[in-house]
Image (cartoon, rainbow, N blue to C red):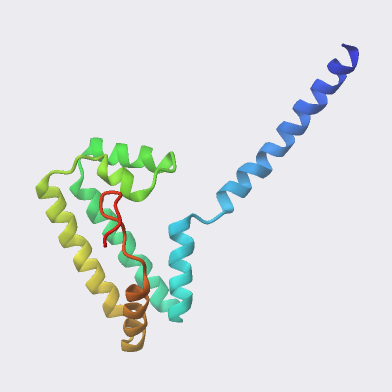
Length: 145
């Protein structure tokens, strides 16, 4: 019993000293969408100016889309992101109206057009090639034939 009482404070101290390291590692590990985006940017050989322009467009698009949402939907989206929910899942849980879906679709289409305008013709061609090589996404959990 006495040995256990000596081990317990040491174990607690070890856990407490490791916690900041684990938190720092979790915060520095890139999320899947970010690392995938970086891989795409690297494959396209984007200039620093192009990367900055694309980031500005993405940030603007995010703000515009969030402007379409109600305050409750924005709060739910933030909470879902904080819990690590996948992007497609949290959007489905927002119960968007048809009007909201249509407005978001227009915003995203405009964003894609702006992003295409930042790319050179060669980069656009590469992007189309990468898109054609992707696996099709399943519809409602089912693979398409």
